[in-house]
Image (tube, rainbow, N blue to C red; front, side, top):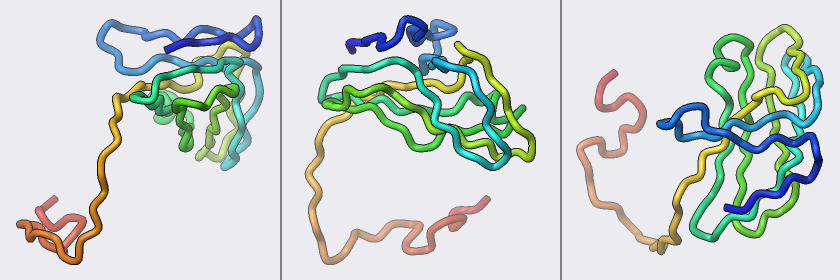
Amino acid sequence: IKLRKLHEKAKVPLRQTDGAAGYDLYSLEGGIIGPNQVQKIRTGLSFDISEDLVGVVFGRSGLGLKFGLTALDTRVYSGCKEELIINILNTSDKPFEFTEGYRIAQIVFIQTSPVPIELVDTMDSTIRGESGFGSTGV
């Protein structure tokens, strides 16, 4: 993975512990996310990743628990070289204020490979069958 800082204030993503799957992403600027609003958060970073990887952005669990923040669908894939901008949703009824350099989300890099998709007329039966959610107990 190659990383480019597009702004001098941008911070390089870091893993906080050896066993962590995600690398923390930091806000380039401070701001306020209003109640029940989505805010675009700049990182000042651009990634160059290989075709067999995808970077998936997740919210930080502590921010979700304490402040109701969640990261909306954001991915980094091969060929996507513009600045990583993260959409953060504030699900609470209170504004959330953050500072420049705030650990706002995390990115996890996942190995991928193309898989063939085959169109079929029927599927093999399973124990679940067509029952769906909750069919195996709760």
